[in-house]
Structure formats: structure tokens, C-alpha cells
Image 1 (cartoon, one colour):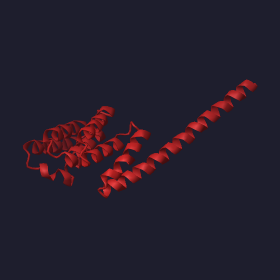
Image 2 (cartoon, helix red, strand yellow):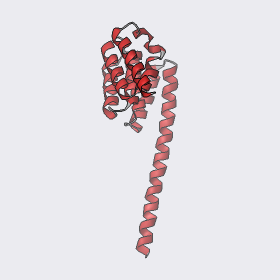
Image 3 (tube, one colour):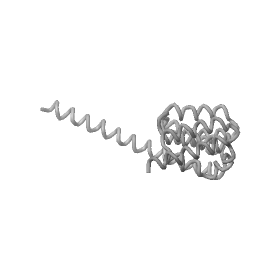
Image 4 (tube, rainbow, N blue to C red):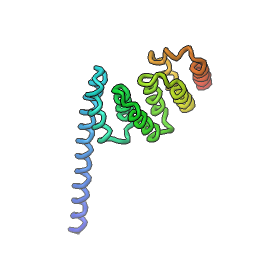
Length: 166
């Protein structure tokens, strides 16, 4: 009987410690994410970099912080490292529309000269979720691509896919 109570007590302590560790991990993540997004929003990319690096260290599987780190790296001229982070975003969740929305925004904001890569990302996004693709391509960051034939074709496919779903 005492052995069973002893095991239950140990299990309760271990589970409690896990919850405490998770709580503090999420608080630290929130703190660094707030600092990074404030710096990024103020276009202080050098300040945003260490904050987003800490976010990635705390939650390496979270694609949002990796995308923000990639954007900050690109804005500071570290393009190769930025591309590695965006590749990691793709590798972590390749079948999620959210992933391809982040990748599309990365190319539109940070590497607008890579039209083909951006269009490939948008097409993948469209194939996964046309409604999300519609929201993304209507953002102001994508207006510069409106004259591209491939972009116009993609807009038509998105409209057709959304009409078919309705």
C-alpha cells in the first residue's frame, strides 16, 4: 500500500514539475516574442534578431518565430541564413497552409526579386487552402505582382476554387 502511495506521490511531483516548466517556458517565449515583434515593427532588425533567436531556442518547432527570424535576418542582409530559416519553416510543416502563407509573405516582404519562388509558394498555398491564399494575395504587399501573368492566373484559380467551395 505504501509503495503505491509513494509512486502516486512521485508521479504527482513529476507532473507538477512539468507543468511549472511549461508555464515558465511559455512566459519566456511570450516575453521574447513581444520584444522581437516590437523591435521588428519599429524596423530595428538588429534588436529583433536576438529576441527571435531566443524564441527559436525556446520553441524550435514553432514556425511563426522561425519566419520572423528569417525576415529579420533578411532585413539585416543575412540572406543565406534567412533562406535556411525559411527552408526550416517549410520542412517543419510542409502540408499546412499557414506555413506557405508565411513563406509567401517572407518572399514578398524580404526578397521581392524572387518572383518565381514566391509564385511557387503561392501556388502551393492555393492548392492547400484557396481561402487563405485569397486573403494573402489581397494584402498590400502583393500589389506589385498584379501585372505578372502568373499572378493573374493564380488569382483566377483562387477565385474559381473559392466559387466551387461556396
